[in-house]
Length: 239
Figure: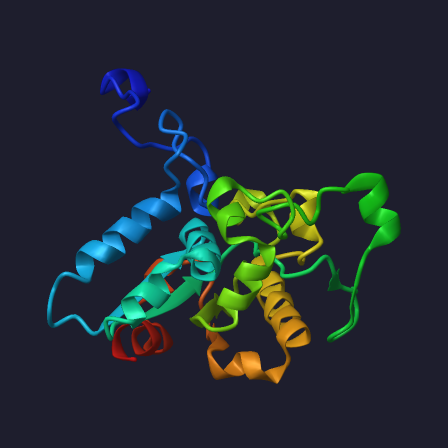
């Protein structure tokens, strides 16, 4: 409705549905990614001479944005050369981008395999972006799958997940029920822990030099609980 109401055209950038959360291009300006907009904001902030640190935090869909942006943006390295540290705090994302085509085997702690029978028959695009690194959108394709893998392991990322964000019903928390998402886990809590186990399996223990996952006790799918929590404040505002 706002497209007509405000006469939005190619001079404006705007996104439909959830495409903004994965770095998709603007509807009218097909050459501008939502990640490009964040890059621009970061560069603008860097003009302030006393700025030393930037923490980008996002909840739910914003958490998905934060995860995928952290793995693909070149701005972290650009600002690092200016002495500005950039950190990322994704909170309760619904899905993640895996670094390879393996997913955790149900009932195991750290066994990751390709789900051949299920995926080939029913979910053949399970490793396409945004769930994996195949069929990347233009912003990420410019980096390339190997470039994304190399960048992610150097990025400072703290994943925050609510202890009670474990409701698998979309009516309660709007969780994604597509087969590609279900392969990552039944609920957001399981998807978060599975993804971090995936990072450990893919990169080894050295990933913990830059990244960690923390559980916020008693919190569900609520930014209003997690952000002001002790863990939230310590990892977003104090580090």
